Amino acid sequence: IASEMRKPEVEDYFVKLIQRVMPKSRAQVVGEWVVTRRFFENFTGDNPRFFQQSFSVAGDHDGQTSSGYRWPFGNVGVISPFNFPLEIPCLQLYGALLAGNRPLLKCDPRVAVVMEQFLLFTQACGLNLNDINFINCTNSDMEYVIDKPTSR
Image (tube, rainbow, N blue to C red; front, side):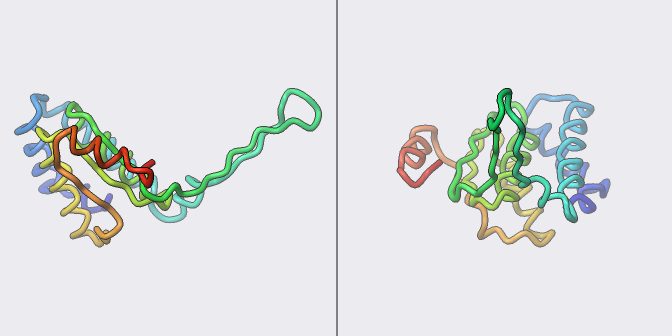
C-alpha cells in the first residue's frame, strides 16, 4: 500500500478528492496524506509483530509489576470525524486490523467517499475487504449497531 501511495497520480487523486469534501489547502491535505503513508511504511515487514508486543515494568515496591498484554478484541468500531477524512480513520482502522480485530468503520457522511475510495484502493493493492466492515449511515443507526453486546 505504501509504495502505491508514493505514486504522484495516486496522491493527486486523493488530494483532490479530499479537497472536494473538506475545505483545506493543498499543503494541509498533502500533510494528511504523508502522515497516512508513513503509517503504512512503518507497519510493513516485521513491525506489526512489535506493535502487538506485551510489556512488564517493575513497580514502586518489591514484587509489584505493571503488565500489559495485547490481545485482539474481535469486533471493534471506528467512528471518525469529518475534519480529517483520511488520516484519522486510516490510522485507527488499519491499526485495529493489524491488531487482529475486525473493525467496523463509520465516517461522517459528508466525507465518507474518501474512505470508500481508499478501501477500494487498498483492495486493489491486495487487502481482503472481508476483514473490514464499512457502514454509511445516520448517527442514530450507528448508535443502534454499537449498542449491541457484541460491539466493543
